Image (cartoon, rainbow, N blue to C red; front, side, top):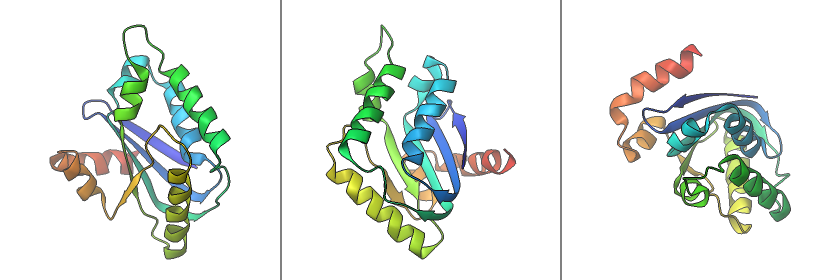
Length: 155
């Protein structure tokens, strides 16, 4: 399960997952969200934060090359715009993950990310960070921490 919030003024998409993370839940969420957004909102995204803190477990399915290639083709189709370069934009989006609170789930998440990195992949695999404040500092958005936390907690 996930919920998301787009902060177009910051170029930030925040996706919070909970419960078991099955298969390619993150990639599937990206596709579902992109289908819901306008093309302008989609192109406003410069960074994605995957909040995995409440995920209880991960499986290691759907880390194969064929599934990743299908995801990337579909994502490119969703970003088709006559005046914009989809490949360039998608390649420039930075991805970050907040690790699960459960130590066992964190180990599985890191293994999943390692497998995805070994696959031929054009979209970036997320880097993990200990907290949101560090991620926002990397994006020069640390002054927006309270605003973002408040918005995510009130949704």
